[in-house]
Length: 213
Image (tube, rainbow, N blue to C red; front, side, top):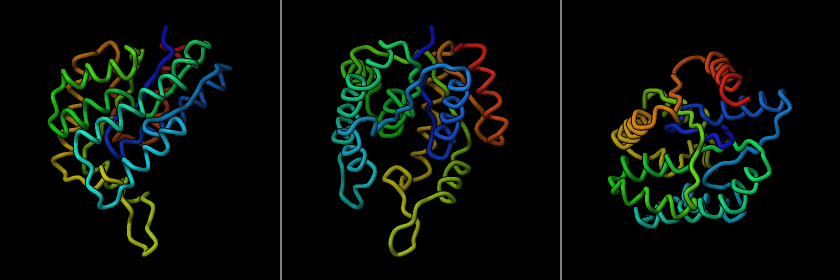
């Protein structure tokens, strides 16, 4: 039975918007669900999120970055995800372990097998039942980020650490996500996120009706 659903994709893919569509649809069907995210799904995670995404010009080594994400995930599973699943609720999570494989593995070049072992330790073996991968061209995603971006006090666009990465990094991440989806076609549903938001939402509601309820 599908209970734990993750929403994955590159920056600007629209996954967070569509997560709320699925949440709203489940609530209309009187299904109890928990909406959460990584990093930042717990009080500790909020602090880690600030360090990871808003560190400014402070350098964070690749290994430090990885272990901060894993610490966030371990706390998140223990405090939020596992209790909700035990209570019979749907859990809708904005990013989970696949993001570590895509960003730190394919993007940063870290060993994928090592990352999988670390993910298993942080999650105590918990894996998603279903994962939506929102895929769109990198330049389209980053353009969306730029249009919606918050601004700093001097009026300039404020980007997080990953949005400042070069295009080839984001392309490696995109190809990494697609490789993960090809490796597990029964778990992943690849969504063409370049389409209009309403069309994507309609597709998601149809999948929910068919596979979740």
